[in-house]
Amino acid sequence: MTDRRSSRRLPPLPALRAFEAAARHLSFKAAAEELAVTPTAVSHHVRQLEDALGLRLFVRRPRRVALTPEGRMLYPVLRDGFDAFAEAIARLRRQRLKPVVTLSATVAFTARWLVPRVAAFHAANPGLDLRLHASDDPVDLLAGTADAAVRYGRAVPAGLVGDLLFEDMFAPVCSPALGLNHPRELAEHTLIHFEWRRPHRDNPVWERWLAEAGLPGLVPRAELTLSDESQAVQALVAGQGVALAGLVLVADEIAAGRLVVPFGPRLRGYDYRLVYPADPPHPERIAALRSWIRQEAAGGLGLAGRT
Image (cartoon, rainbow, N blue to C red):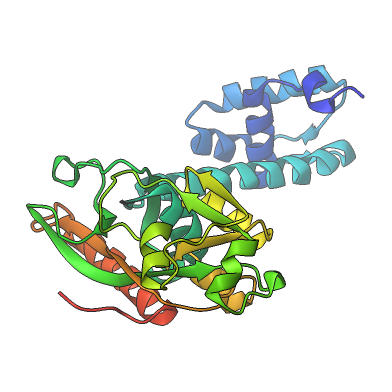
């Protein structure tokens, strides 16, 4: 089917604007003042539109004009169209003028924790827009790449201030459909791993957990390694196995009953912190961001601490 928009045949825009203004004022002179042209130019544009349509749109009288039935039919269509144009342009201008605060975080934290909470930010800050920058590589906040970032680690980077949001814990997580009740049952299932970007002996991995649980020699039925935590969560919800997961990123799934923590122990992970320059160029934006994310953190899992 042919797209009707691709075959539009419209009269020139100046002619349509001149007619709409003249019809609204019922005066070529008033329309000319509004459009910053001469009355003769308005009359010429209206005549051009009438010639293009093959219709008379105005009844011309010595001191005033009146719409013909055809003019009365066309006027409200153009009036509403130009009103819609004006409103859309005004919205775009307001949007362009609104300040923006940019928050950087890992891909997994952005997708699983930040995105579901964006509406709350907009509700609390109608005059400020939020831009989320998802990257597993730390951005240079001092260079202005982003206004703030959620960092995962044990220390605040030099030159930055950090607010502690969560102290992450790791535990076995799976679908309730698996029916796990005891750590020994892990031998009957697939253990899901995800790759840590920075190998470290303190990383909460299955080897450490099995030793802590007193099962250092346990051999699972199979193992699956994924490159991203979000992929691991999808596999868990699908019942593909058991992962040693950070409880922050699966909190919503656990609350909804899609995932469970069948047993312990739990391993200490790292800390989620909101970090930002000590002397930011836009402190009011940092204050708004800080208030929102700390409130969300406190409401979701309990605020882990204060700096």
